[in-house]
Image (cartoon, rainbow, N blue to C red; front, side, top):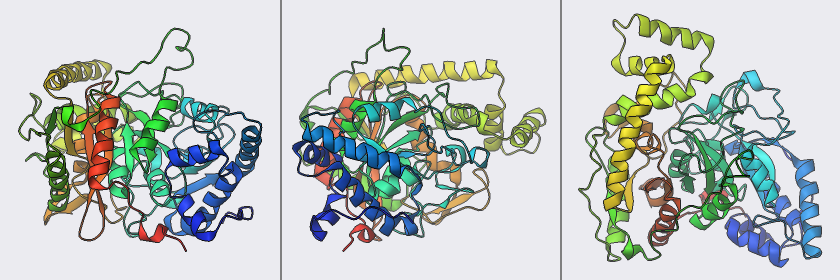
Length: 501
C-alpha cells in the first residue's frame, strides 16, 4: 500500500470533492494558485490508498519523481511561470505505453523487468505540457482482451460493481478515472480498448482519427515500440469531454522526426450549435444486436437530442453491410496484433490455415489473419480503402453517426477459456465473446474518430455509453457533439464507492 505524505490542511469534504473535479477545473485552480501541485498529488495518493486495494487499477508507481515534479511545479507558479496547459496535474498512464525509467510491461510476464530508456511520444508531450505521470494502470496481456487482468498484477474491478470488469484493454485506466484516483489517463484502442472501458466504467473517452496521435512507444510484444501498429491509436480517458479535448490538444501532432516538416491542423468543428449538425443513428443491427438495456439507453439519448430540435435520421447507413466487420475489420485487427502471439500460438494458427478441415469458420478467419501472407494483408488493406471511401461518401451527407459501443453493460469477470471459446449471454441468448468488439471494430477499422460519453444507466446502476463518430480527421466535431450529448444526458456520475467520507 502507498504511504503518501500527510495531506494538506484543506477541509475533509473539500479534499473528497477535489479528486473528482474535472481536470480542466483543476488545471485552472493550479494556475490561479488556489491549490498546489503537491497538495493535489497527495490528495490523489490518499484516494489511491483507500480505493485501489479493492479496485486494483494502479499497478506501478513513480512517486519520488512525481513529488519532485510537483514541488517544481509549485515553485514555477510562485515565480509566475507556467509549463503548459496541464501544469501540475497528476495523471496515470496505461501500462502498454513506455515511460522512461519506470516499469512498462504490457501486462506480459516476458517484460516483467522492462524499464524503457525513453518516454513514448505521448508521455513526452504530457510532461512538456506540465502533467505529472505518477503511476501506470492495469491491462490484459498485450492489450488483447475486453477485460483487464494478467499474471503480473491480477484483476482490475469495476468501481460500479467489483464483481464486474471495467473493460479492456484500457480497463485500469478507466477504473482509475471513474473512481477519482487520477485526473485523466492515456489509453490505447485497436479493437475498442478506449471506447469499451469508457462505456463500461461510465466515463468519457476519445479514439482519435488514425495517425493523429503518435503511437510510438506502444508495447504489444517483446520488441515493440519503434513502429506504429495498423489500426491502433492512443487517446485520453477522462471524466468530462472538456478534459478529453484538453488532453487531446496536447498529445496530437506529428512524430519528432516529422515535426520539422509536418504540422497537424485538424478541421474545426462543423458547427457550434447541436441543431446545425446533420446526425444519423445506427443504434442496432440484426448482425450484432445489442442488449435491451443498451438499446433503451441509446434510444433515450437520441430522443433527448431530438427534443433539442435536431432531426436524427434513424435509417441512414453507409453503403456497406455489418458483415464487413467479420470479413475485413477483425482480420485487420488480428493481423495488427499478431506479433504478440507466442511461437506456439502462431504455429497453431499456421496449421489451421494449412489444414482447415473441421476448423470453425470464424476462428479460421482470425487464424488466416494472424498467420497471413503479406500479399493477403495488402488485399485486406485494399478492401479497407474501399470501405473508407464508402464512409467518406456517407459523411458527405451527414456530419455525425451515433452508434453503440458494446452490446452489453459491464459483465462479470470471465477468465476461463480464451477469446475464441468464451461466450456471453445477452437477453437469454448465448453469443460469441468476439461480438464485444464488433461495433467498435466497424468504426476503428476505417480509421474514423469516435468519442464516447455516458448516456444512460441500467436499473441495476450500470453505465451505458454511446459512440459519437465523425469523418476521418473530424475529431473536433465528434468532441463538440459529445459535449452537447453530455449536457443532455448528465455525463459522468460518481460511483458510490468513490464517494469517500
